[in-house]
Image (cartoon, helix red, strand yellow):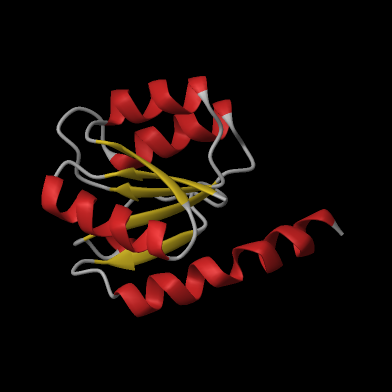
Length: 122
């Protein structure tokens, strides 16, 4: 499976990418929303781990663009905000995680992804 980490904090991005690779993902990183959209246009990703606060576009705008380009991608939003504080509409994101990110919680959610896909296809 492939994953795109969209995180402007380089240390956080590196840490996430390292964990994802350890869990068997082929990982790429993007540090801005525009870079993420460009990468998604060029290659598809199974999972997109998306920070809400990016230097150019916010994570929800990136998610909207991802849904247009690759509707089947799983989008996991990571933010310090509470979900109720964000204008998230049904289907825009697949999972939500608060910062600081609990890596065990993320790993558990990622392990469930193939099951989610099977359920969606039936």
